[in-house]
Length: 185
Image (tube, rainbow, N blue to C red; front, side, top):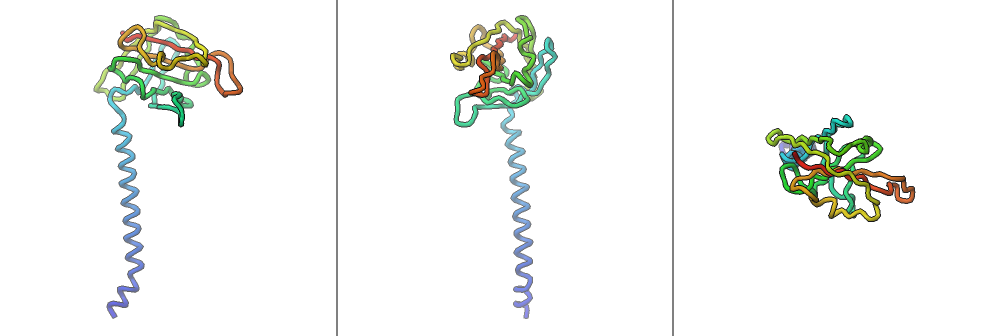
């Protein structure tokens, strides 16, 4: 008799166990995802870009390469920090990209001598200010990304890049790239 009662409630017990297991999995998975985000946000990652001369104060998000490409991915409406470049406080180039029809729409108005400030992800590090020293427009077809990502004149540089020139409807991009270089001050 006891055996039959146990067999009768066995499906219910299995269901409760399955529900418990599924709930535990989701909680652990969500915790891991949240922890992964926190782990991969280094204190010296750029979190905000400010360019007072054009009224820009925007968040910066980490971005890498486009899928199956060696071309930097550009976020749709945010400033992207290319994770293959330097972070704040590291010698080399902090490389930021943005679209010319969204976040970097006013970038062509930046002038030599303008100041740009980057706020790090963590308040452990101080924000860094840069001064624009070079503004160039280069054809997309001859652009040397190794040169763009290399410090040219100073140990600590900030490089901003966006599309410029005429639209190229065949490639859904523009013919040139606007490149602004700034030195840390």
